[in-house]
Image (cartoon, rainbow, N blue to C red; front, side, top):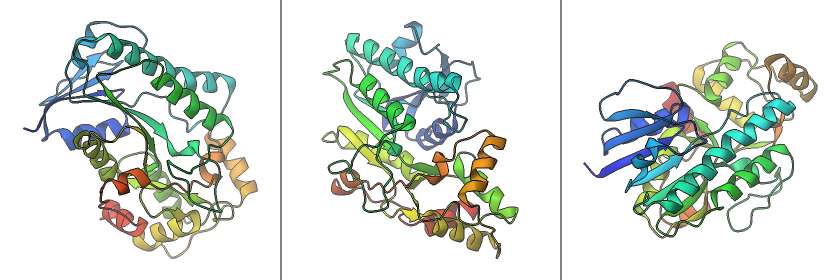
Length: 305
């Protein structure tokens, strides 16, 4: 086996499950730090922590090949003051705690990847945003990303290389955005949302997992790295691709006013749908990373196959 130990903090969610599955045959041991106990599954075991205080779990970080921090309350909710507070705390507290523990360890993890979000860039319909030239946006979700990355860099970790991975919308079979879009298509209401001109910066779940291994294997990469497919797609085109691949000829559009009503009913925010995220993975591409799913057609075909 190639890797000795991979640690996934907050790894019981969708992306953590994807990563655990990806590394199952590539690592001797995968450790998930979670608030809830779970039965050991082969070489994947769960260790409990509260994400706020140091404890026995800190021993799991010693000499790990990689730590990926995935902690954070789902932003797919209404931005009430209570939810806003939980969104911040669920990201900042575990990140600062991990930084403090790693700073104090004699043999810390070799690489620490902290999840961030491609939504940190401004609403862009006029040009792509990359790590070098991208412009940071404004608003609540951007404030969350800025605070999250600041927490990540709060502690010096000279023995641990750090990457803030600004992830696009992960497309996959089991959870996250794709099953929800597919449900709209199945109901005949899978047309464009808003004016359909907003860009969607997406990444197939397999490429999201592959990118973390690439980062392990390329020690020259640190700091900010975008993880989005190299060919973003407009919302109208993405919905067309899903309809066509699924075999649904009709898809009623959802204008902005209807989305405003619907988002209140289902308990989410329209920003998640209407913000134009035109983000490119310049540093991954420049380092030679090849995406297996470069186009939305290829990704949707694979997911629905």
